[in-house]
Length: 252
Image (cartoon, rainbow, N blue to C red; front, side):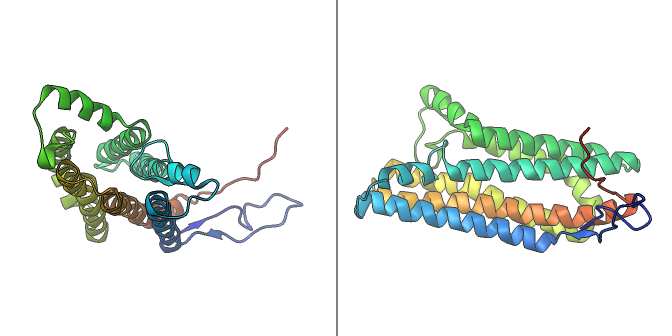
């Protein structure tokens, strides 16, 4: 993917033309995945240290900051940011699709809206609030101990059905990548959540529970990082076709 900052033809008199700025979608995804793994490693390390290790000054604060099981933490901020980044990329593709009057424009806008909602939910813990309300109304246990997975599963199936025609029409490589990212994300967000719920309702080993949380959050973050790489790769030829240039920042 190359974003042209300024070309020789587009350079202003008296300014020096620069080469296009190259952005590797593979490297971006790789860095984001590395960041995800680093945060999960920190979650596991600081949780284990808090439960079983050396209580050095700041240990509790580090545990609180990197506890992926809680919401107001660095891993949650990172996951929410990944989802927001994916939403912005979906929106960019939608804008280009609308400009070229492509038939799938509304689907791209729909995905942008969905991922924006997921980003907000990740940061605001709306699904947690739903779980608390549903727990008061329903007698749930086992895999449904966290009952938000019920509307979550219904929403997932509805989106999948609504986007069947979209998946048939897009590029096969992009379709495969979207399906991989979606399967990994849903397996973490719903599948591992139900595994955690089952374990949480039957046992009280906090170390193993922290491991399950790490696996779930890691699957979600890696899925979105992979998705961002796929979307950047899909977006690249659109930018080249439009001859996009970024003009210098010249405040007055």
